[in-house]
Amino acid sequence: MSEAQSQDERVRTRNPLQVALSRPSAGAIIATVIALLVFTWPLWECLGDPQACTARGFLTPRGISNWMEVAAQVGILAAAVTLLMIGGEFDLSVGSMIGAAGMVLALAMSEYALDPWLAAALAFAFALAIGFLNGWLVTRTGLPSFIVTLGMLFLLRGATIGITRLLTDRTQVGGLREITDGDIFVQFFAGDVIIGDYSLAASVFWWILVTAVAWWILTRTTFGNWIFGTGGNATAARNVGVPVRGVKIALFMTTAASAALLACIQVFTVASADVLRGEQKELEAIAASVIGGTLLTGGYGSPIGAFFGALMLGMTKVGIPLAGIPAEWYFAVLGIVLLVGVLLSNFVRRRGTGVRS
Image 1 (cartoon, helix red, strand yellow):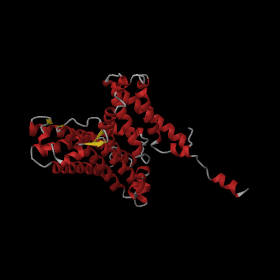
Image 2: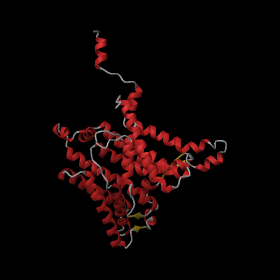
Image 3: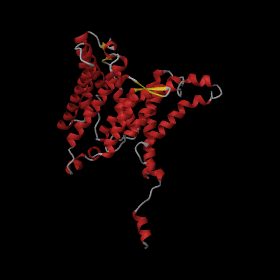
Image 4: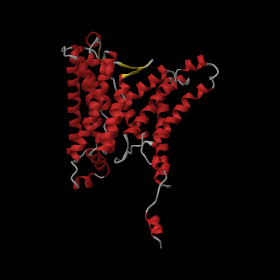
């Protein structure tokens, strides 16, 4: 037997397409392209009438800005949630954290006259403390993170409503425009970034930045290897020296911080806070992560996939009414999108890895 034949038996070469399809984000990218084609299909019928196409709005500068901003609201959370899911855990409390951190921020400015930057620091400190508590409870008690964070979801929501009503006799805090207008710090969260003749909300750039940082941590640092090891096999990771408890606590703090960031963006943008902000955002973030190829069992996933998963959800939310579908059908369509996206991601991953069963 020649050396070349022996090597061929030991090493299986894969073509570039298989390598590309084996990446966690491959299915999400394909699903996003399909969603774009679906929601722009009506535009193809009006190419002879530019005014009618513009009225559709989906591909106009304003339309693109709208669904990018909606996607950013999910994507900021999804990047952090993806890291946690790769680490083998869930955080269902991020939706309630948005409302709670936003109310901490608003009350600190309106009731205690703190500067916006100091109020934001307080909101982040509060979120990080709750994230630490979530991680500590999960790692010390051995309870499933699903149960721990579900309890924290109810606790945060109820406490936010109760304390806000106690302090203000309302569940909303408004009138923050006089405090935030003209503040340079606020513009980092609520301003628009002008690119030529177009403008994009600052939240879009926060989304890109958070995703890039999450990708860098996961793929370029030792901590990223620890995340994969913790989610893949926590016992084996612990045996080779990975601080599994510390990794999980840090990841829970990261998801809480992402919720606080989104809370700051929302409060500074609309100059008000509401205790019910963030409802069901935790489910949308998990959906974006799963569509993006992250496995529920941990140890596999990509923030880039979550980026495209969030982008697809943003397209869906804005595209539904533009396609003539009543907005109340959003969650029904979202369920279909989630199922189709996951099936497509699984199919693409199996094709890329050569698995047929």
